[in-house]
Amino acid sequence: MAWLPLESNPTVMNKFMQSLGVPDTVQIVDVYGIDPDLLAVVPRPVLALIMLFPCSDKHSEYKTEQEKEIVKKGQTVSENLFFLKQYVHNACGTIALIHSLANNQERVTIKDGYLKEFLDQAKDLNPEDRGHLLQKSEGIINTHKDIAVEGQTEAPDPTDPVPYHFIALVEKEGSLYELDGRMSFPVNHGPSSPDTILEDAVKVAKTYMDRDPNNLHFTLVALTMDS
Image (cartoon, rainbow, N blue to C red; front, side, top):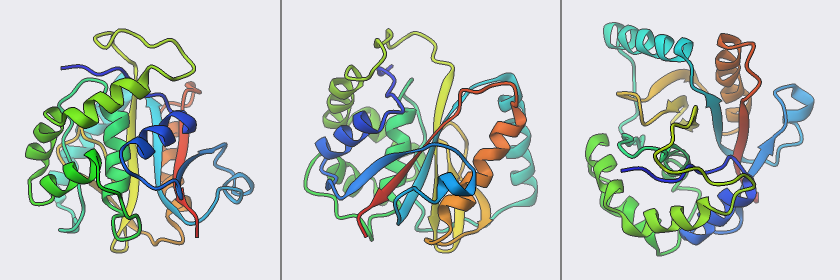
């Protein structure tokens, strides 16, 4: 199964969220840079940071080693963290949004609709079963399909290889987590808080950029809400 890729475009992503029942007080906004002055203009509170980055051999090799290291050393992961596996080609944008919203349900009241139905059904499932449930969630699939063609760039064929990938960074119970549906598990990046999540998440994003310094194709957007 393959979906059309979702653009890292706040207008498109906001329309997608609102079509799924997310209130318009919750918005995706551009993060124009990682310098403190540019981070200062991002509306607060920030609920999550979503990064689109170029796939590369360097990244794949690093992630393979990172997973081995975590399996060897172990890590603490909150039982209340929502994580789902990605089994659908090009679904990473939607999964990054789901990860961002699902882990902020105590702050975001999602209206009745396809997303709330999915989250209710997925609540007690493991990450693998959540991923398989998404494959069968026709409402989310069709909404994604309708919105994905509205981006600024011409929509590719769903089966074409897309050399970019979305991940989400969220704060849960005092820790910062990297959520990537292609990995075996979330990655705990250490202490964070609702007040410092943007700055903490940007530090993780910078490690991606530092591993691939000659590539400029990194995009950051933040999930924010009216305070």
